[in-house]
Length: 256
Image (cartoon, rainbow, N blue to C red; front, side, top):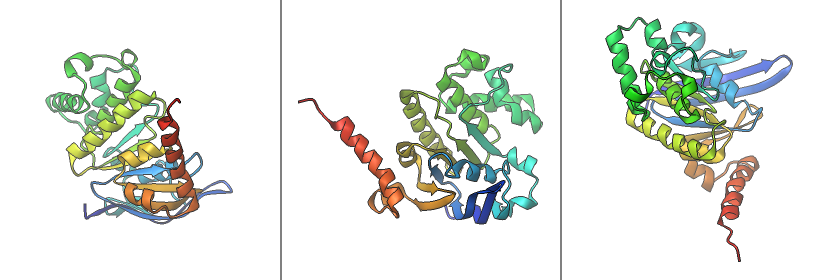
């Protein structure tokens, strides 16, 4: 994990008169799983969407794959960046297999290659192709739909996958199961770079090689989970970690 694959240099973003990202600087290495943690309005989703050009920076440079975003064909770039969102966004009139095949078809893959890739990906996300491939999204559970969403994001073997609070609408048990799956998938793929936005500190600490803690469009700390816990860089980070300790104490309470 030596090559810098994503870099922000003095990036600024405004919505009207409101500055949401005042001056953002960071770099991410190829193969990292980075979680971006923050409450609503912290700038975490804006940051994520600037990586694939869904939101354009007003100032500064966003560099993806060693090239400035402003110099790239954004449509072509997006076809090679996986994107998973909370709402899943599966096409209701398409089967699971057809949903996964959307981008490969755009890239004019032949049918045999597409079918092989669909089967590979369904197996990767632990869904049985024989049982699932021909179903429609409405016939799947929320957890199954999100697994299909992950499979679709990986369809063309992208170097980057962006996750925008993908498990926020799921119940706790399914969420924990899918967190384990994301970690397993990332480890099995080896050199993929995952950026995962969340407001859940436990999720961020569990998944991230490093965790970017954001507040008011700025980075409070960008560090390993271990260093965050041992050496919080600010009162905000310390208070955030304190909520984990409070929950641990709460669930650890026993009846007299």
